[in-house]
Length: 398
Image (tube, rainbow, N blue to C red; front, side, top):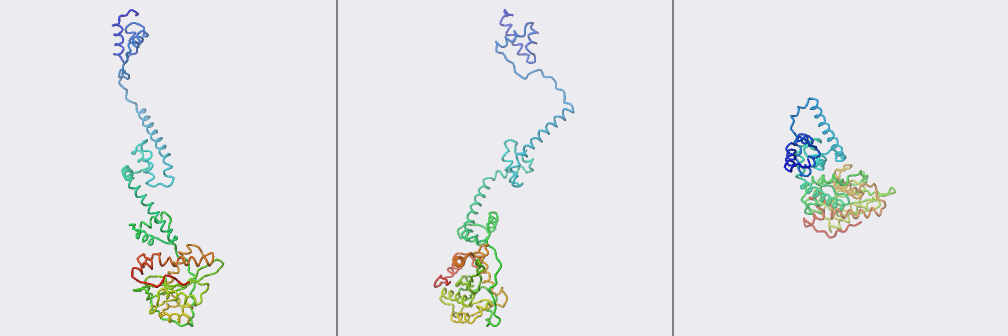
């Protein structure tokens, strides 16, 4: 073999390449020499032949058992994959099985498992997921707008000392140029856990004197007036203080503008309390001549001293029916709102000084800042300013 001509060697190598199904030893045996010699010739020639081109032998059709085994293996692989997918989905549903949780799960694993497969397992429509993904930018913009609105609502609520509810916060934002619906305000407030203050039980301050003189009811539960300084209502409410003590607040409210034109605070409920409030109202308005002053049948309002004060101020007295709080409902409502917005869930003030100062701040704020639904969500002073009503002073007598 050492002296084989080059052409023989080349033909042997070519034969090997032409028979991809035959091994080197088979080709060498056919030519009558050692297989290592042919292997050395193939290696020296750098010859190679395509892989995978062995003689095609007709495959026998699989038996029924082999087909069933193959199907079972596929099913096992699918179940194992589903188990792995569900294990990864646990953290997405920890806070509840919301549809958005399913969408987020699909979005987080779509590259590995595919959208179609992931939508089948949690039971969602692929079109719904595609829509959710397509509208992600709009949804993010809405969430950012809702967060900004929530921040503004918190600011208004905090500015009102936590007293404003949906209507007043809506009016405040609209006046600031915000175009917003009250239903949206209510929805956002529920989400962030904000609410206005609520009513508390009343403390009785009206003690009628059966023997006292009575005045006719000139109001008749009509708590409206065409213009300011024509009809007023008055009442007394208690301000609880630690130690079982009370301060008492007497008010005079204009029915046209709901403005608190006069008020007085004392540690007693003697007649001087209500006459001081009437004097403060006269100082605010300059004159009360011809106005109606409507009160309940408390002993302070049926006293001779109060009747004389009304006469000197040119005021006509009016009284509700005995035992009927509805006949003086506006004054009762003001007292309830004042205490719930000032106490804000507490049962009492720590001291008389705190009670006086809080009342001073809240009563002035009521006139200048607090919005009133009856006035189109304006404050009493703003309402009177719009009407062109003037007054001599905003100072109140305490």
